[in-house]
Length: 600
Image 1 (cartoon, one colour):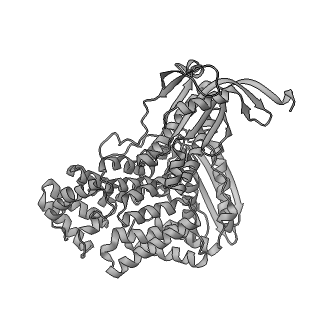
Image 2 (cartoon, one colour):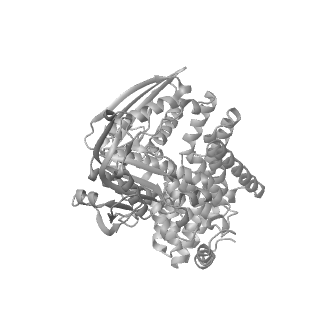
Image 3 (cartoon, helix red, strand yellow):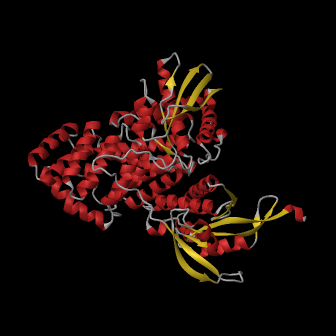
């Protein structure tokens, strides 16, 4: 190698690795690998957004170089805030925490971009001094950024580190920013102010086909595109169920931005005829109503996923460099039997309708038809599992005893198939969480939903389901911010009543009967056929001491579900339930349910 191929320069270096990585892998390899992949995407997002460059991500480590000290510290603070928030609900021994070390000094840079020298070595040694989830920097970094970043620096003294001849003064970086979701500022309401990162809502694609029956195709396309955008790290995406309520009418884009708390809106249309499909899409800034980007896509409907991949990548670039485009999907991998794909989008559209036993049964039929044509479709297996398990969970009082046993067995088989076919399928992990909830193991249910959040940070269902798991772990106060975040991600969902009912449950278990009643009434206003909410409302009135109202609520419940009993709505603690939930069930649930007259 000639001297001209080497360049010596001053640079800011970030070195990071996972604390306790071997222990995490020994405990749960699949969850650890999924969390590591998500963490790498977070690192890459903030490194590149702060004018940094990733040098290496071997194993559980990260090495990056920056042009400025301010950029490297800002990126590290953002990374730790996001990663600590994502793991905050996990058990202490399962949290993935990175240690980050930062130094500014001389490096030798090769022509291929790799770097060497004491600057790199010192950053690596500082990383070893950092706490899990923390950042340690050198004196050179602290001096360069003092007064320029929102952080504090605690002197750790001079440190003698391996293979460095002179002591290195180290500083622990601190920040006052919270790392967990906070409850909304107004009791009974959800804060819809825009988040501190790019945010978008995908409005329903208009169906321009002559055949009205093709509307489901546009609906399924909207949902799938929303899912693709949700995989872009650093992007806040409103769920498709909320955006769907804005379809079919003239809208004011600026008002949409205010109503949903988003900075961007994606609008489009799809026209399908014969063997051709045409998609038009435009990205609009809600603050000004100005169009930032537009494009048209023509193609074969059997290759619709490849078209979606093109759109997502172009939108990400249009919004700005701070959004790093998700890893390109393998379109070939996702191609499937055309008839199966057609049935799949029908089922997706049905799944976003208000929840009822009839709708769930129709979903089940559609996804079974998909699997008859394409038995290796992980997405169909995952969605079939959800449709079956929700029937068992929310409507088992309307099923015959032999049907409930059959549903449970079939749901478990569908979860197993979905995960075996694609371990990174978000909906497979959501269904796994439902299965563990049905089986009375809230700790494993929480773990499954944490994996789902690691794979898709904008999954409203994963956030809401994690909150429910916390309820059944006996921690209703911790459940509230997760359920509220689900409502923030999907504030106009047809399923909003279920989340409102879950908030009511969390307050009921804390003996906040007034708030429980308020949320139950909102839930039933959204969907009056929610049996579990009806039972909770009756028990909440009894908890408050209003026996007359409790009886009226009970009468409404029994008209919906004549064979109802307490266990259908209040989930008795199973063998794996923690003592905290057993105590809540005995001391809070049963006294109120019995006073209300709920059948046992």
